[in-house]
Image (tube, rainbow, N blue to C red; front, side, top):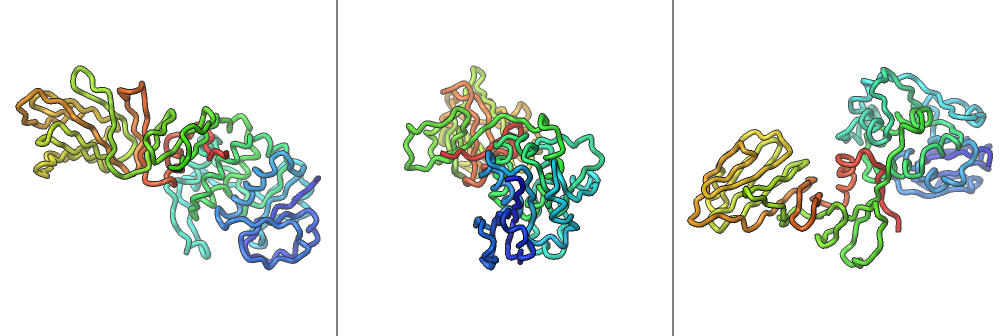
Length: 386
């Protein structure tokens, strides 16, 4: 096919496109009030705005793309768009672009009018998304071109310069839809197809969430991270779906010490004996230590580092060589167990059963997005399809 028009529709009247119906595919996320002459209609869930529809089309048709594809929304009169025929003349990339100051992208998007009711600001910005998720380096740019309204046509050679994994990786960030993040790609399409392809090249990691009834013997590709409620499952990283205390087994050296590195807030339970149980709580850069038998907070101090080093002697407990806590015991003190609890923490430590066993503790399966956003920006990461 020489030209194709992809329409991301909600409830818009698209009858004005009837002259082009033979080359149109409608990705419909709203009502079914569509003229019968549009005979290529695909229904999708109403998530991810127009970007989700565009990416879905690219991924599903990656090997069968038209020479030239026009991507557009159902209603374009309020987007200062070009004429349909102008887009169809495209031989590389065509869009009505304008310059945007880079500092604007470093802030949250200012919603106006109809978008204000959906306002839920992202923890990230378009600038972060473009640099880290897309992998397009705009740190030295003063301005960038943006195709407002995400209406553009692009030749298939430009689409195919990016690997399929590139598009799958982006689609992942639209599954847990945030109204602001739905607009990040609007600010990115021009850059994607007008930046050197070498800039956006990353290795691939797939991830898979193992259900409790799945067999352990199932074969997974080598670069697959396995998520599981069951701690018995493991790959190069363990994923625990819980907010309860779970045991860890760090290497304790000859100086009675162990070290773990953390990414977020965490509780560490140290059990020496029934009289000497301590909870170390790191929350918003404050470290607290509680003696659990008496429920007394022994100390509460600022704590900026992400490396937790714990050691003990016959009479004292040390945290990062800065905090000393008296321990009362009659015998040579040995630690019986170490447990951790967190609702969102990446933990890296040397395990006595293996050389290294990073661990991610989370609340639920949806935390996968934020996990990879925080820890695996140098990879394309997306769900494994079995």
